[in-house]
Each structure stands twice: as C-alpha cells, then as structure tokens.
Length: 336
Image (cartoon, rainbow, N blue to C red; front, top):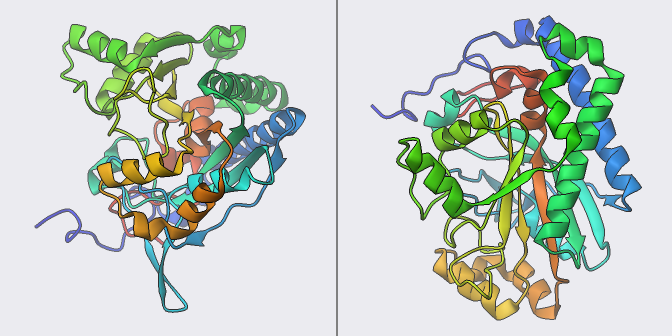
C-alpha cells in the first residue's frame, strides 16, 4: 500500500490534537514571535518604498512548483482553477503598476508525504513575497539580507523574554547581525558536500540532507547562487553569459535550519518564456493570461520569497514547522 492510500483522518501534526496544540505554551510563544516578525517585515519593506498588495488565492494557473509538490484543483464556475502554490506570476504582472511590491501570501502545496518528517514542510504556509522592478540579483539579495537582519533585530528587541523562554540565546544571531553573508555558487556547494561524503547531484536542487549539512557548518546565513537550468521554474532568468546557469539564489540559515529565501532575476522576454515553458514540460496554452501580459511587456525585475514559518522556526529554534503554525497540515496527513 502506498503512502497516499494509507492516509487517514488524523490530528493536524500527527502528534498532538489540535486543541492541545493551540493551548500549548510553545504555540503561544511561537505566535508572539510570528506577530513581531511580520510587523518588522512590513516596517522594513514599507521603509524601503515597497507597497503591500493582497495576493490572489486562485487562478487558472499557478507556479508549477518543484521537488514533487502539486497544486490543488478548484472548480471555478465550471473552469479548472488552481489554489496558489505561489503568486510569482501575479507579482511579475503587478510590476506594471507597482515597481516595488510585496505580499504576505498564503500558499498551498501538496508536498510528497515523505517530506512530513523533514521538519521543514507544511501543505499550508505563508511567504513574504517581494518583487523589485529594475533590480538585478545582487539588488534582490541585498533586500533579502536587510529584511532578515531587521526582523531578527526587532524581534529580539520586542520579545526577548519569549525567545529566551524557548531556549534561544541572542549570541546565536550575533554574526547574522554583523552582516557580511558569504556567497557560494551551487557548484561550490556541491563540491563541499562531495568533500563531506554526501552524494549531491550537480544538476539538481541541493537536497534536504545536503542543505542541512551546509547549514550546520555556517555561523551565519549564506547565499547559494547559480542553480542549474532545469532545477527551477521557467521564470528564473538564464545567465546569457553562461547558458545552463540561472541568475538565482537561495539564502540558507545557519544552525541546520536550511533555506529561508529563494529568489532570482526574472525572465521577461516573451519568446524565451515560451521556450522555457516547453523545455520544462509546461504547456504554454495554459498560461494564456500571463503570456498576454508578457507579450505586452513585463518590466525586468528580481525578487524573492521568504518562508514565514521557516523564519519563525529559525527565530524560535523549535524542531519542526508544525510547531510554529497555529493550524498545521503535514504532508500526507489529512487534518482539520
């Protein structure tokens, strides 16, 4: 019997009944940290000239995703729509009216059941989604680093006793606040993993184990750039000087917490987008509204998404994402 067929109605995290989870002191502490983190994120981004938009929840297409995650279907007045796995396509379209924008966006991704034990996956999660017209990758990385530093600083200012009550020590974040995040390429990260005996493919995303290994060896967050073409969505811009390499990045947290941010320069050329869709197995006809916008012209941009629950887990030091969600839904677990 496969994992999906074996799914049964269970309590939300598979471990703790929802009522018990909601009344737990740890859940309350995590929600206080989340509240301050979101306040700080909005404060930082609005201070940088960004406008907050409310994101769409359903659409005819969504981010095709990766790593085996699927979108949920919705019957929208007889039309097959999708719940948003991410609002990346809408972010790009919104640049026509807003050159610096962000969402705090709810996303739904039906992750493979085997990811339930990573401590880093939920079916329902939120992202701080940022897009910047006219920016290159370096510009987006600078905003992501500044946002993370501001959030960490403000949360420690506002709720230090909550963090200490969870066993966190401000010294853990001293190097982060000092700045100077290292940048290594995907190829360099793969080489480091090979040197440590981990069999990471050079043509794919860094796998969960590899990401955690790299994360444990760092004393502050660091960037990984230049992922291979084919490992990410069609909207990540291919480097014109190095075909096969994408102008993208991840920001990896130190301490074993893994990826916090994923971003890139965006592909905006209509013909290239269509070609990239076909190369990645997507049917361009499904993306009619997006391609019509692209044909009319989408501003060049760069942007990123920062996972809210991953950020709160990193701040609180808790073991798994379900502990920092009020209503957790683990992959493969049917929950209320």
